[in-house]
Image (cartoon, rainbow, N blue to C red; front, side, top):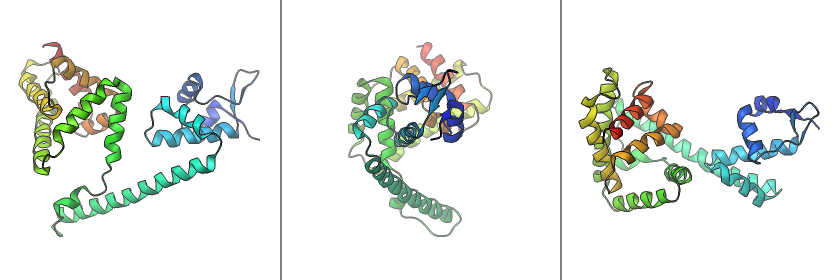
Length: 255
């Protein structure tokens, strides 16, 4: 039966050597054996376990929980894969719906009909919101769960127009900051103070409680920690994420 070194398995799976070493360190994926040359070697069983790990990561399961899940699943891979297949099937259906939504939106923008308001959001998954919530709790502790639930309770029952209006205010505050970034304003410039006041006040309104400057500075670390935030912010310009988070921290420090 074929065996693979760490380098070979990294090339085969697309998982970095550093990540494979980390999985070994935390006991998530141990090699089948270590050779006299001190190289780690992985066999078929380890390859299948890595596939399971990648499936769980794709599902958004925190790394520290994956080992527990794999231990509970035992060796019934057919049942495990059946569950993965069901999830993938649902994801494909949702992706097709998103494609239809995008196509209809493009058609409207080209003057080829008008979408109903309710159709604007078809295909967007509530699972993504749940993924962010789990990540926040996993990263910042159980205390974050109370903050999340309080914010959700605040907006439960609000009209769609009210939610859109609230989000638009955040978009305006963010766009104002992006304009200063493109104008070359230094991240620690005091002229940014009123803009960050508005942005922080908007966050307070979304939370339903005061966002202190210290907490606002902590949000910069959150923006840096999750790749989705960097992707989102850098759509406004390459490097905007780094500028924004540096500016947020400078603003918080002046409090």
